[in-house]
Length: 222
Length: 222
DNA sequence: GCCCATATGGCACGTCGTGCCAAAAAGTCT
DNA sequence: AGACTTTTTGGCACGACGTGCCATATGGGC
Image (cartoon, rainbow over all chains, first blue to last red; front, side, top):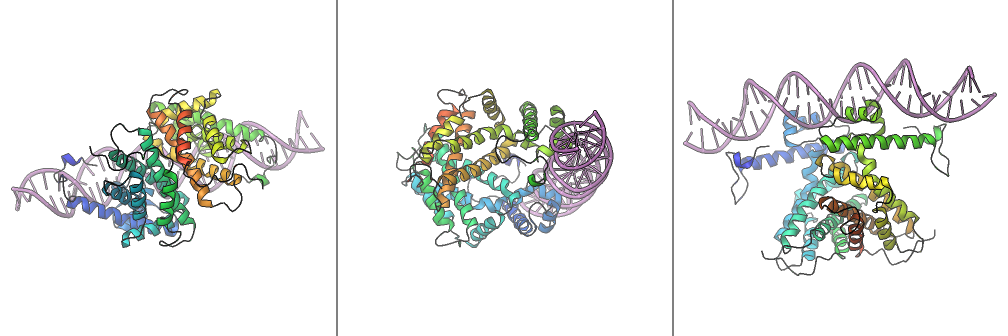
């Protein structure tokens, strides 16, 4: 993993990422797609890393340059929703209360807007059945919780109780996880009653109700 | 793993477990102790399974009969508190409201009562620093959440919304996890202000306040 | 064209985790 | 006690995992 500062193709401080970085991200998604199909077909345990690499058209050695573990190959699919969530939350209107912003961005990120997000949600439902992928699922949510914690901290005035912020991030992340697991267990469709969007909004609302973080109304201006 | 029914040493339907079972549990704890010391000294990554086995006085092959992964060796230490928690919750007074029982048993299980529980808490704080053990930490809490979910379901009248029960278990588990992580980050002692007991009680209270599961007061009689 | 940074593939290597089988240990009976 | 049965243990081999190393290929900047 090269340091960005030492790279000749350094990321511009503003604007979209470098060409090579976009290439790399694209390759990651291709590998993830191939891995998801194999995992869904034969199960993660019965799939070797070499098979994933071959299906993705790369060598085994290169595969391990993109993912540190074979199960991690599907992480981009499982993490897409969470990353979109944090992005929406960060970009949401400054005058919106934190809890309101959390719930709205969660509902928004759980709506199958584009075809890619819809695809990711259906893969999630499929892959959640595999017990061998539980650790990736948990790791993805742990990462999401940490990103969310940082984003919430940015909205709060400095000096806010760190435990309160951690609790809020944990509550919101657990809410989304439970909503998705419940949706995967039930046969509910991706939209309408019982959809992740509805379940997620309800779970976030209930889990964050008792938190003592919502005294201030909007985004703090540093 | 032999089926109990086919075993000559079948577990009695009531009373304490068989001698061999207690022996096995004792061995598990000895291995966990050895693993914890090695992990704390050199880090989990730099410790081989063979070293753990040797330190515990068993062969490598036998080690893998007690734990499926090398990192799992410390799971008994990390899981002890959670198991005690679920046990206390299940045994708590029948007329206690669920939320009250959850909070009290959590505080009780986070108190360093006997020397062994105190030991486990200090190991937890030490081992949480190792990023290679994050997955075990998450797995332990996922297991604890599932056990707690079953225990809560037993207290609720049949037909209670499954999502509500799942949310309650997730909220309580996340509360304890955050409390322990916060305690591990801070240098607070095991008792008094900032202790797991105080943090845990507060976290459970805040995270479960908004749940819609607490209409009935006590334990449901089936 | 050249130069240089990065990406890739192949190979070797140590570790991981498991199936298999024979030996040792422990429980159950007379 | 002894004989018998079940379980546990250790050793071995094996495929898979994940990484360090180096030579080669790729592609942008000059």
